[in-house]
Image (cartoon, rainbow, N blue to C red; front, side):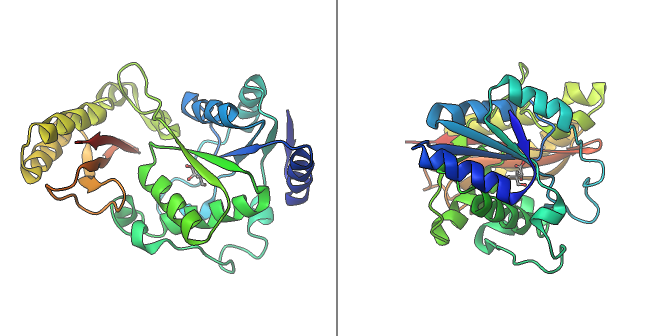
Length: 282
Ligand code: PAF
């Protein structure tokens, strides 16, 4: 597997692949790859002839007090894993390649209608950072399809809306959440958890499962959310939010909505964990 760093090199590669009639799938990541990322690669491999992965820790999606500096950067290990998975090409650009005029002089892509709620409330600017870099990466790579994890449910919704609104001709594919044997959603930020916190962390998903049961049993949403928040706090989390939403608009669900998603974020020690559960009541 080759690693390229320049826009020109990746464009040449994709142009040649498409000239050969190959379907190209793209998996954007920030590296520090784990089994969750590899499941995105496998999904991409099922759907295309060529799979390209990018690794780029995008400064624009990190807030001033967030973990940009400490975010784990493990390029050599990531390369070995991708080679093992028979990925065709790795794109690992520098910030100079992605933001040649610096972070303050770039065109931003803002999907405001989906960006200021849930995670966007405590991470202002985060989804504009994500949409901007994903739009740039899409224009650089020009794949036929792109694969994103459903774990980042709001991110996936933002990207789908950007692609629809801007008529970007790329099919967006969502891949199921990869979990460990105790239900903890895999995430690079799990690496911040201590041994003790690792025993608590699966309770986030356990709480979401209880919320699902309660919704299916017809318990009023306000009671469910009060209990779930108290549950998380008792377990040792500092809950950020837990919201029952319409799967499509991400607005608070009413009792008439049938396609729901419960979105949650909670701090545990140094980590901010997110998770979700989809509920179809039909
Ligand atoms: O989900 C991620 O890893 C990042 O938000 C993404 C989509 C690669 C954009 O930087």
